[in-house]
Image (cartoon, rainbow, N blue to C red; front, side, top):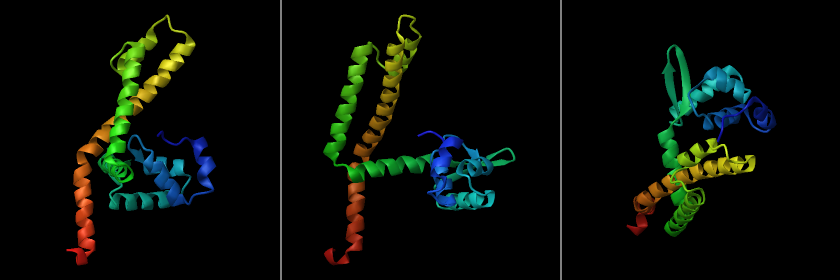
Length: 183
């Protein structure tokens, strides 16, 4: 996801509340941002933005970062990582995750063979070849983006598979506690 541009804000301004727009902006942050910046991107009043940011910090969804005399906010990346892993586990069976992992690995292996490289970084370096046509450059640029995305997905899926049994056990324990008649 990329951060919101001013043009992008206009299309969703009318359909969302100010607080929803603020939350939407904070979910896309790639670096710590100030209340002023977030307020401007969300097209929301400074006071509403400040209040919503404090609520998000209290809920553990944002972290406050002090940068000199300026306070900035960023997502709690650790929490986001675990939420992504939890979602993968809840929405997929172990076999589905294994299959997706195999599909991703096959795709990466195809790119490695096609471009005679081991990593997307090596493919990126090949963009400097003076012999490539513009179509080949665009193709490689697209493959690099997909390859990077696949590596991130592969990393998340591996984590999900590693934690699958633990999450299942925790769910069963919660179910047992919620239904005392079965214990």
